[in-house]
Image (cartoon, rainbow, N blue to C red; front, side, top):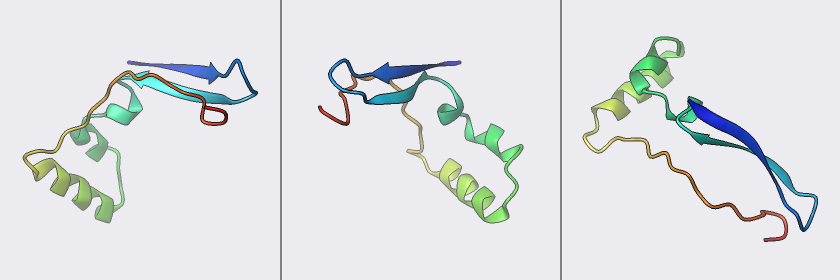
Length: 69
């Protein structure tokens, strides 16, 4: 599972919800096909799965305020 949190800047009023780790953004594409209904999208998912270099990269990162930097 992933972790949800909120980043808040100490210099301004900027605040952003963030999601880190393996969560909904990192689902196995086969599991998406179980519930995804539109046929056009299903075909795109299947085509992506056939690509040899198809993969999803999930990582932790360092965040900077998007408002004041």
